[in-house]
Image 1 (cartoon, rainbow, N blue to C red):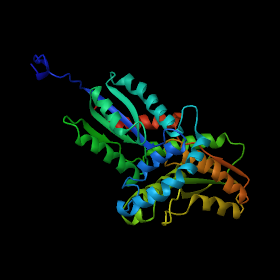
Image 2 (image 1 turned 135 degrees about the vertical axis):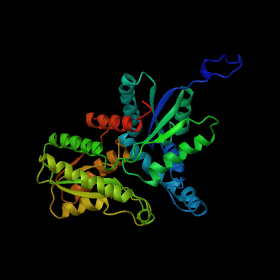
Image 3 (image 1 turned 45 degrees about the horizontal axis):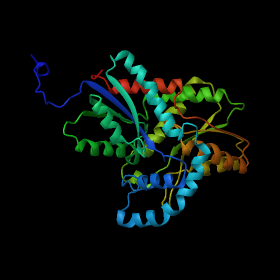
Image 4 (image 1 turned 180 degrees about the vertical axis):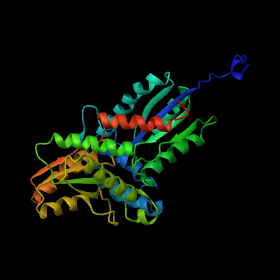
Length: 348
């Protein structure tokens, strides 16, 4: 007889266990494209010591006195340009990715696997979703930050937040973390397949494919963050993989980094500068893709697709296409399922 078979006292609290949780996590979004909601979102995001590595005594007066009084209105205007019927594109797509995973795991896992989603900043929170998974009987949970390239300001801060939640649990579930997959053949193949699918649908043939990654302060590289190296490896492997197909033999590739913030030196070359430089050199047809984003968001839909197009055309370019992220594409979902299953090995 096992302890589970023994008669429990009448007043024993109910216990649910034996299920497996998967929590996919992305960066975050304001609740609505309003100045007030964006201000709340930015206050949380820019107060994270992983994101802004300055002493709070120096940074908080700048944040509270300047940035949160000037930036939210401008950011809210940008959010309104991309906001959809389902709300924030990043939240809607991340939710759709989790919802697409659920039936795939339920089929082969006896309904033991529960897939859910959360945002690191904003709603739904990591803490709330971990609590919900535990209450549904998940005593093993795979935390899956959907950042292909590791960065302390993204992957690490998700793990930090989950660890804060674990500290408060008397009965802690076992927790695994999805590792970065920047050079995983499954990821590179999915990128290549989906990019080639989108290129084939264009009404022009690009001369150049720009792979734009989110920027980080240059000092993070000197401090040992592998993000810069991970981005370059992804771009290099993607170029090599697309060369194998032979579909676009004359296509050039360039890497760049977008979304600079503040006066500090950031990783280079900057995406906006690359677009203007290429137009100035006579490049007329460009496609741009953001392999570091698992889902389209403000930075891809507004900064790249709208601002990038304007910058390129004003500098003399003629045809510009911002390609979608993997999102819920066939290639993207197949890749996501495969890497999640691999990390769940031994549990399912």
